[in-house]
Image (cartoon, helix red, strand yellow):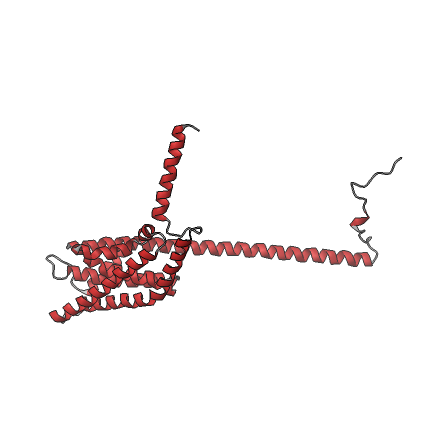
Length: 295
């Protein structure tokens, strides 16, 4: 091997190690520290899943009142803002703890981009409108540990849930803006359904920066959900066809065994009746390696 080839292989190996460090969040089985860290992370997520789901629901309830109740006083709105900010601080602390406990810290963050966005949102005022969507994602992701969202029914619930959230967010961003067409919750629901389904009639369109940011998020979510539904349907069809094929093979094997048994039984009956000669034991035949008789 030449020096150039050895250098190229060394660089490739280094690149592979870096890529694995950035993308592989699974612990190394030979690394006791990482294995123990994975166990601690799993235990923490299991213990806190219900609490985080309740907090996410609390955030969404507070946000719903903040957007839909037009009779709230300035003091009431300030109180709701305080509640949402406190819950958001708990979200940040939760992600920080999970990252510290993870076997591979950077890879864990790479595999949880929405959670990272949720933490980064407060740093960008224009992105704070995305809080409600990331709170919903928090609810879904942590709720999966409670066996929520693992069936086809959960996909439908997720669509309904995200439609409601995006309608709230876009209404909060658009209502009262100059040239806005989304002025009621019903307008927001219709816009969310049209946008999420990627139809885009164009009768209701956001005109504010925050509203357009929400639109980008809804479009991405809509495409993802369509892909998820398509993949789920394809997987179900393949599984059903595979199951039928395996069932057919089992039935053929069972019928073949029954046929062999029936043939053996028939042969015995014919031999007992003297119609055919009974089979001689196979041991009666001389083995091929037996010594030959001398002439």
